Amino acid sequence: MRDHTKLRAFELADKVAVLVYQVTARFPREELYGLTSQMRRAAVSIPSNIVEGCARDSQADYQCPHRPV
Figure 1 (tube, helix red, strand yellow):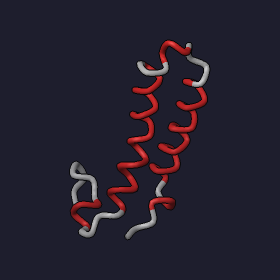
Figure 2 (figure 1 turned 180 degrees about the vertical axis):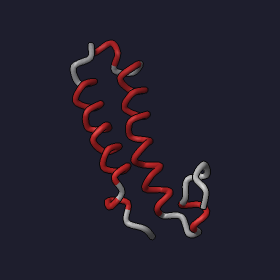
Figure 3 (figure 1 turned 90 degrees about the vertical axis):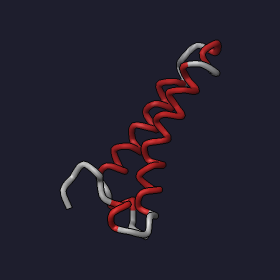
Figure 4 (figure 1 turned 120 degrees about the horizontal axis):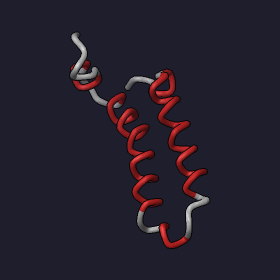
């Protein structure tokens, strides 16, 4: 398993998730199950996908499919 905490992309994605939670905390209560929920799930999915990719067994699964090997 690779260490996702060493990746700059993970650092940035984590910061984005925290910022999204801070900003959406100020949204109106009626948006709690609409826009707030959707933005939070999207923000959390980015670092989650990075962690999942780091946990993959093969190098091919780990690398970005758009970058040459």
